Image (tube, rainbow, N blue to C red; front, side):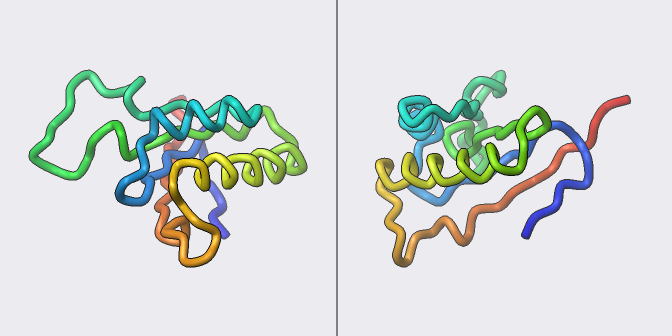
Length: 103
């Protein structure tokens, strides 16, 4: 289990082939607000694997543990609509990063 070391949100790196903008659309339809990485990148460097389409930002500081659990269930459903299956899903390889709070 990931326990953030600080900050207000988590950055997730999505499995290959999952588009963050598409995921954000499906998540919104399920009642979950996430922000696609494309909202945060000034330019796209296609020479490496850091593209806005591979990342989403999840805020967690204003939600109760119960709301977070429900949001994750709904987000999992949105991921399935983007082509990630429950069995053998690359979700296990999703990387989460916590960004510290700027004081």
